[in-house]
Image 1 (cartoon, rainbow, N blue to C red):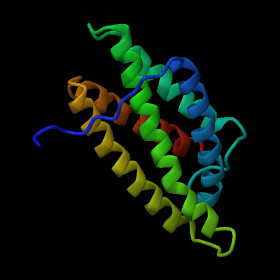
Image 2 (image 1 turned 60 degrees about the vertical axis):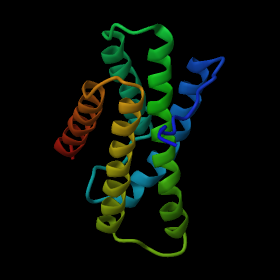
Image 3 (image 1 turned 30 degrees about the vertical axis):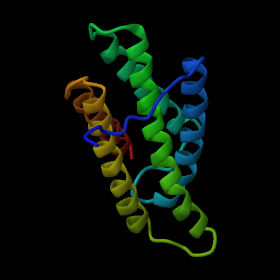
Amino acid sequence: MGTKFQPAFSLNYPGAYLIISWGVVAFILSAYARLMNGLIPEDHLYREYLVCGGQVLFQGLIVSQFKISSQRKWIYLSHMMTISLGGAVLLLPVLAFAHWVTLPPFICAIYFMGVAGLMLLEHIQRTRILKLGWTLSLTWTLYRMLILAIILFFK
């Protein structure tokens, strides 16, 4: 078969999905950030919640400029948060392992960057499937690089 798999979204409450997934992702990222102490500033209670929420708002602002239906905009944002959830789930094995073994922050950072790279590839794939072009993947990357620069600057 020549068709590509596209995850289906039949969400009745996309806003609720975005809020719940945002909370779960930020919670996991807050825990993971502690594994990278010394490389990045100490995690403040709300930092990851602000970063994740900011990503949704930033990408929401960008996609709102597209001349597509509101439904497609919600579908894109839902896909974006599903990618974030997937990335957060990939961090869980390292978080669990870190309960028994002290992992060097550098190793945790390398693993984190690998997960972020996979997330970018998945984001590119999904925006291609949704026929939304490169802009959203570029702004997704730009936002993350800007936030990283800000976090490192205020170290």
